[in-house]
Length: 248
Image 1 (cartoon, one colour):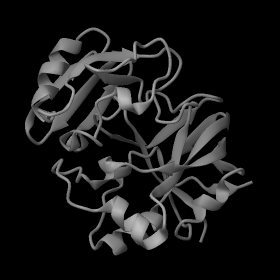
Image 2: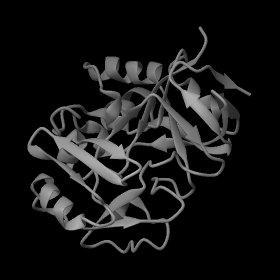
Image 3: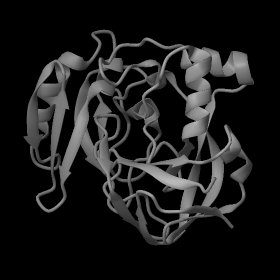
Image 4: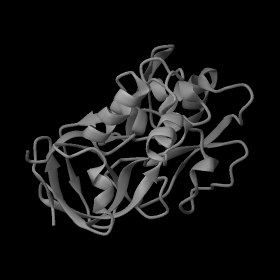
């Protein structure tokens, strides 16, 4: 079976909503356009927007599972984001100019025993990926199905906040790509490393509640807590749903 690009996702605000796309044009050495362009620093964070910072500085689903139920829609021309959550009214705001409105909106979704969301940061020229290099993430749907079978329930891909989901691979085949190049549509990427997972994946994106022992199941069944790989864009180009995915 030929491997194909099955899903494309971006996350305009790190940890605060996913948005499905039909196509994207990647740029060499950059994160996916508008993916994790903004991040929400909490009150104990040292991130100031002058450069990349580790994920521990930001409000995210690993510590605040209700954030996982947010869906996002970006208006790139206006640089506004619309967020939806089953427990909150829809909000449209400009992250660079209207942070207070967002902070009021998200406050009820944050656990009382966690550092509160304090400000929105943006680093010019790159998204705030979990990796310290500008990355895109690639995951295999067969690996997700294998984990779903082991957990005993169908796991929504949104739990894993990927950019690209590939259909037509063997389970865990993507781990063999580390150190290799991949062509997705007209773009080429270099696979750099496996993605270690966190507690965000335990939360159901429909409800924002933890309902699956993803990490425990990965460890018990396969001896690791990884799913998917990080890659670096080495040749920009368009990638669209249904495009072939070829190992080079």
